[in-house]
Length: 301
Image (cartoon, rainbow, N blue to C red; front, side):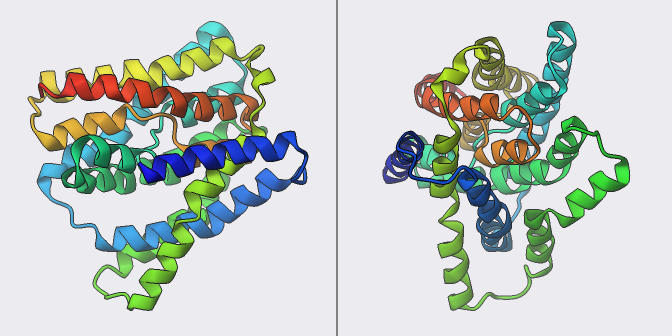
């Protein structure tokens, strides 16, 4: 609960700083750059190093990839039907197709399922959401940003994406025991991610952006908070017969609001920043209520 209070407070601080004109205009870009280059790589180096994968957690690792694939298909079709701008389609894919499986997900899992569910949440986040963002997410961001870069440029972006570099290093270092001081430094740096990300989103959020974005916001959040978790429920429970705590937590993670880091990548690529900020802010706020409903539904699994 303390983590949730911190996130809400940082988001409100960001809004207050913007309204009071207390931060320079490039503050969100500076915060986002710090997150991408320092905070997120530190978390990856810390948590990937300690992951121990088991077959029972395969659903959790696969879920975010399935979610992103469904989201990419859904928003691509919606973009064709509604004639949405390319930047808007890319923004919806990165925010509606990726869940906040860590900074909101892990505190919510602990609240509803206890400490026993945390391991499943970490697998879903690190081997699912984060890895999907670092690879196919970067591809989508490159394709839908202005200029639509070629395959070589996109491959270069993936290879030079700091969290992806950290992922490769973390995997290589799995057999090596980190010194205690190194783990402590990584944790302190990683702990800056969620507060800075929420401040950044708050700085960029303007409720006036609801005008003209209402339809696209509703489209993204209906998919992310209701339709996508429902489709995954039918797949994992109905078709594959999944049961128990791992399945419950996996589907609970699927129902999380939009991914903060995915939103930052979208904003860095200039993919409809007003809509991205609304997706994160409104999506996280609504998810506190929708997740309660999903927890109630998933009790029978």
